[in-house]
Each structure stands twice: as C-alpha cells, then as structure tokens.
Amino acid sequence: MRNREFRLLWLSFTMSVAADQIFPVTVTIAALNSGGTASTVGAIFTGRWIALILFALLGGLWADRLPRRTVMIVSLGFQCCAVAVGLRGDAPAPLLAVLVFLVGAAEAFHRPAYQACLSSVLTPEQRPTGVAMGAVSWRIGAIVGPGLGAYVVTVWSPRVGFLAVLAAYVLGLLLLLPLREPPVAAAPRSSAVREIADGLSEVLRRPWVTGVIIAVALQLMLTVAPTQVLLPLVSRDTFGGDAVYGTALALLSVGGLAGGVVSMKWKPGRAGLTGVIGLALYGAVPLALIWPVTPEFLYGCYIVAGLGLEIFAVQWVMNLQREIPPERLARVTSVDWLASSVMMPLGLALTGPVSAVIGRSALLVIGTVGGFAVPLAALFFRGMTRFHSDVAPAAPDGAAEATPTSLKAP
Image 1 (cartoon, one colour):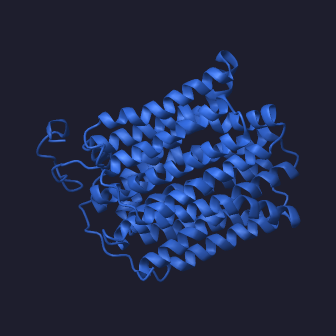
Image 2: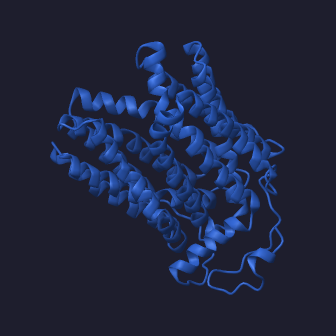
C-alpha cells in the first residue's frame, strides 16, 4: 500500500466492483417494479454477455494501443453516462436492457486495461499481494454489494440505487485522474486484425496458457453454469426454501475471500499445479448437489470451492503478467475473457433442456466429472505445473515473424 500508483488503482477498482455489484440488483428490482417477470430479467441481462462477446477482443486491443489509465477513465465515464439515464425513474424493460448492454460494453474495455495497468504499477515482488488484494476486493464486493444494493433499493427506490452506482463509478474515475502510469514500450502499429491476431499468437505460443483458457471455459459450461441454475431448485426441493440457496452463494464468496487472503503470503513452488488443483475443487459443488445430505455439507463444499477458485485465479493472473509481454497483456486477457463469456451463457442456456432430457442427477454427475477431470487433464499441457513456458521473444507488433509460430520452440 506504500505504492502510490497501486493504491489509487486498487481503490478505483474497489469502487468499480461496488458499482458492478449494486447495478444488477437495482436493474432487477426496477424491472420487476415495472411489471417484468423472471424471463424479462433474464432477457435484460443477456445483453451483458452479448456486449462482452462483441467487445472483449476490441477492449484488449485498445487497452494495448492506448495508455491503460486513459482507457479506464473513458470506460468509467461511459458507464457513468449510461447509469445516469436510470435516474429518471420508472425505466421500462427495453431501456434497462440498453443500459445493461452499454455498461457491459464499457466493462469489456475496463477490465483488460485494469489487469495490464496492475502489472505495470507493481514490481514483480509486489504482484502476488497486489493481485490477491484485487481478488479480496472482488469477493468483499460479492458478499456485501448485493445485500447493500437490495437494502438501498428496497428502503428507498431504484432511482436511489442508480444514484449509488453512479457515485461509485464517479469516485472510481476520480481516483484514476492523479494516477501516473509507468510508460509501456511503444510497438509499431498495424491493422486491428493483425494486432488481435498477435494477441491470439501469444496464447498459442504458450501451451499452458492455451490449456488454462480451454479448461476454464469447459468447466464454466459443464460445471459452473449447471450448478448456478440447479442450486435454487435443490434448495427449494430438498430444504424447503431459498435460504440455503442464498447462504451457499454467500459462502462461496467467503471461501474466495479466504483464498485471496491466503494468496497474499503463500508462494507455492509449483504455481500451476497448485492453481489447477484449486480449480478442480469446484467439482465438489455438483457432487454436493447430487447428495445434499445436510445444509452444512453443501455449505462446506461451497466454501472449499471458493477457496480453490481464488487461489487458482491469483496464480493465473500473477503468472500471466509475468509471462506475457506488457504491450500485449491486455489482448491476452481479453482472449481469456471472450472464451469465458461464450461458454458460460451457453452452459446456462443448455442446462434446462439437457436436465429435462437426461435428468437433474445425470447432469450433475456430468458436472462433477467435468469439474474434477477437465482441470486435471489440463496438466498434460506443457508448462502447466509451473505456469511457465520457455518461448522465444515475439516479433514486435507489426513486424514479420521470422519463423512460423507452429515451428517455434514451445
């Protein structure tokens, strides 16, 4: 925290996390107040996934072309303008859908820029703690944000909820204004398509990076998405209400918070092996939903899953920052995000039809096998156990490659 630039960046990120957590609660209650149904809410939030899919690669591209501070400031300013529309009150569902889409589009630019800027303001020795502190901010926001948002909107109105979101985004923007981002070596510019391809090549040149992106995307579709859909059903059918549903999600974030705190100090010898095992622990969640013998058993599995996910996430981000050239880091981050943004909604959409055909238990068995097996299978990718590959330096952006990527040393 003695690092001034990190302090400003981290506080700004914390404010944006708070806004990101209050915003969906406000939109949901506003939609229901205007006569919407659960289907209406689902359709509104589909816009966020569409925005991420459309703009993820462009967000990474421009975060590498421009100063990351500039990209974040513009993104937060855009989100402020979009959210301010909600202050009119009684917004109809179509307008809420537009707001969600616009906020998601700005998010696609902000997050890659944040990850790349985080890498530049931290020294290699500071990165484990800095990345972990970002994870802690995210988890605290996930625990406190929805409840705070629901309280503000219920006690006052959705208009006050939008005002709280706007205030958080504005504060996040103001904190970035005095930030002095370290300069990143400028690379020759080329076409947008070529520069996006350069980001993809950084992924493909490192088998472990490719393996992690594939594993996370498949686990989101096979395991995470089905458990998100089926948890509330299991909560009602087995335990007679929604209390177990809400508590389990809160405890997932509590486990993640613990994982972030642990990662501040823990430096495992084999970062990749540790991260992959942490990712595989999410397989305990669908296993618990197959046999939800007691609420306590279910809660324990969610805590363990959250702990493992955050340990994985910190090791992944930290080692990605170490491996990827700074001028291409945002594009690689956007590739990771794009893969996740495609597979998660696909899994959510398929869960209902597939469970109707093969049954809830059979789907959860698939989720359990996928949750454990997919991450562990990724260990066969070269460099996975250490999250490290010995690769030759990439050609500068816009320069011709002397050797085809497929023939280079992994």
